[in-house]
Every structure is written in structure tokens, then in C-alpha cells.
Image (cartoon, rainbow, N blue to C red; front, side, top):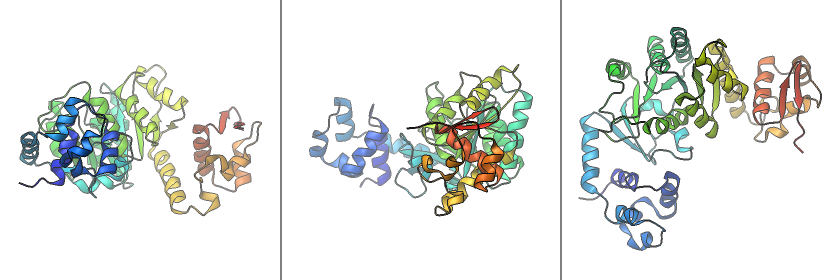
Length: 363
């Protein structure tokens, strides 16, 4: 029986200990099917014995079983080169070669914000996550999270409460629900037109190493990541780090200095994450970014690809420049100025100090 595009992508996924970006480079150079049909191509590559075997003798029965198990749990498999594969996820360094999906796959390419946080979140933290998720869905955004206990679950429920859309990215096969107490939540997500996503084949059980891998997909799907309550050493900060590496925005909700679950958020804010007190703090920044992307010739609203040449930067002196002076010089709204100054600060062109901002000498 002739092999399909899906067969070959799954075969490539099963090649052991070969980085995803190297696999994709091979596909780009030689073509997907050719990698499994031409021993001449494979013989030129510096591969281990196991890797050579996976290319020369793919485990087709195992691949057929994966496809059958996926069908059995009402899952659709989407390959890296298909139009339904999320565009933002294609851009990251190590995207999954295939994703297993249950539910409304049209959500994959809609604007998304991830909301993540502590599994042992306080009641207040869960309430904040739920409220922000509800309000963000009412602005047309899809809420993406990991269906874990605490903040994740609250974010999904907030999206559902707002009659909005939500995506759960899980660290198991789609025929397993973890934690098991979230079986009803997973059903609610699907019944409401949401989506559940995994890179793991059906039958995969939860393991500690799966969750950091899952986190890169959460951030990779989204325009930005909002952290609500997180300890300094936590999976949520791993997601935030993934977001930064992927060029995504990071937002954080501050909390009491006496709350250990606020320390991770405070650390992120110190590193340049945007402080979020309400839904508008996220929506305004996304709106500004959208305007700039749609009107690249408008000098007042254009970051320009090189922030060092941003016209707003010229309005900041090498001594303390108050915000109102920058607003006066640029003739831009205060919220736009603050957003762009934050971006400039993240890039190391300016620094916030008491009384305003100082331009840094970048040579």
C-alpha cells in the first residue's frame, strides 16, 4: 500500500535522538519522501546506526497503530507542512513535526494569549486568571493553557464562562486525561467548540520531562504569555522563558510581597515583562502591535524593524527625560509611548529610572 504524507512525517518523528531543526533541514534539502526512499541520500548523512535504521527500515506497523489509535480517540493528526498547522508554531526553533488534535482545529491559527501559573494557586490567583480569561475572550482572543490544576484550569473555565474559545495543550496522549479530575473540563472544552492539542502519540502517559516540552508549544501558539502566580522555580517561568526565546510578549500579574507565588511574577516584571492589572493592559499592547504591522509606512505608528532607528528613541535624552516630555515631542498618545518605551527597554536602548527614561549609548 502506497505511503502517505502522514506516514512519512510520523516516520520522521520516530527517528531517535535527531533534533527537530535538523530533521526539518533534511526535509528542506532532500524532500520528505526521498529521505525514506533513497539509501544514497541517507548514506551521505552523519547518522547513528539507530537513526540509519529508522530511515532505511521505518517501523510501518507502529505508524499504522499510531494512526489507528488516533482515529479511535477522535483525533486528527496535522502535519508540519499542512495549511491547518499553526503558522506561529512553525516559526519556533523546535516545532512538533505532527500535532494530535481533538475538537475545533480552526482555532489553531486564530490570535491567542496563553495564561499560565501555579498549580497550587491561591483563590485570588484563580479568580484573576478566570476573570482575565473571560474578558480576553470577549475581545476575540483565544485562551491557551495546559489544563493543569490551579491557574491553567481557571483560565480555561474563564474562557468558557465568557462563551469564548480555549485551547488546552496537554503532556499526554489524547486518550489520556491528566490530571484525571479534569475529565469533565476536557469534555466541557470540546463541547464548547474548543480544542485539545498534544505532540505525544495516543497512549502516552504523563512524565516529568513531557511538561517542559509541552510548555514550548503553549507559548509557540500564542502572541503572548500571561503569568498569574508563579514561584521562582516553576513550569510557568519555563513557559515565559520559551516565550522570550520565541520572540513572544510576556505579561505578569503582580501580587503581595508576602505571597511566595508572586515572586516569579515580580521577577519577570523586573526583567521587562509588562505588568498587568486588567485586560486592557494586554489588549492595548496587542492593538498597538497590530496597527504597526498593518501600517509599516506610517512613521508615527511604526516600530521599524530596527528599534535603534525608532523615531521615538530620538525623543529620549541621555539624561532623565520625563514621560510627558516624550509625549510632547512625539505627539503620540501616552499609552503608545509607554508601550514603545517598554519595547525599547527590553532591547536595551533605554532604561527606566525615577522621573522618566534615559537613553543608553549603544555605540
